[in-house]
Amino acid sequence: MKLRQTRSRQTRDQILAAASDLFSRQGYEQTSIDQIATAAKVAKSSVFAHFGDKTNLLAALGLTEIEQLAEAGRKRVGIDSETPLDTQLVALLSPWLTYFCREPAFAGLYLSQAAIVTGPYTETFMRLCFEVEDQVAALFTRAYPSLTSGEARLYARGVQALFHEVIVFEMSEGLKQSRPNPAPPQQLLSQMLTIWTDGVAHRQALKA
Image 1 (cartoon, helix red, strand yellow):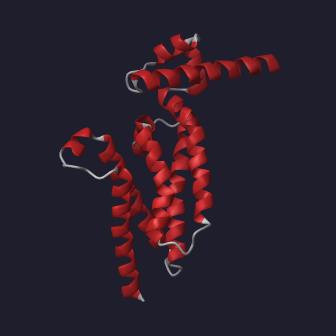
Image 2 (spheres, helix red, strand yellow):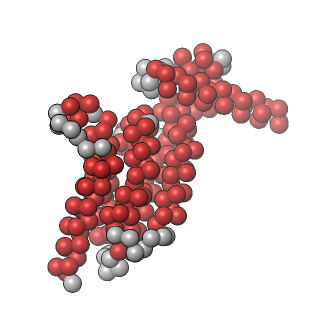
Image 3 (tube, rainbow, N blue to C red):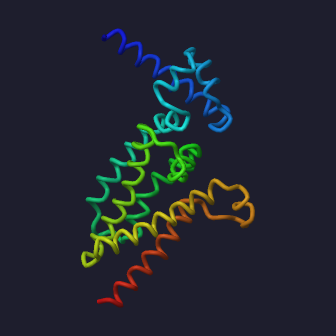
């Protein structure tokens, strides 16, 4: 049994290593399961047995860093309560933005939430990504204790929409070329979040 488990782990690691190399060299869309199996020196059926499909294989490759980002976010929500809300949001989202700008295949997986094929790795990947919205909602609740959970969630979804927009803009060469001297993604996100949180603050002041 132990020998079988060891071989299974070795096969899984071979597939992950081959996929990572091929994705980085020729792109996710241009890489096929056949190519991955050949590079890993395993049967095509082994790739499907371990990962189900190419989307789950991609998600499996991203889990380590995604887990680290999610854990860092959990810790960040509990500190810096005196820092302005927009600054806290930028600090929370900036590592994710850096990651997705550096890894467009994972950004595409994140943005295509409703269309991805269900599987153990994609479900874990998306669950960790969805945690960001919970963390953003927690920051709004801490900044404005009178908010209902529904209001905090609504404001968090607005932040997520802005975050998505920055990622889409950064990934789209056509959009970037249509605007002279576009701001770097981190700066663009910061500007948008400041406008959004200023609007929330104004709305809360009117309710007071």
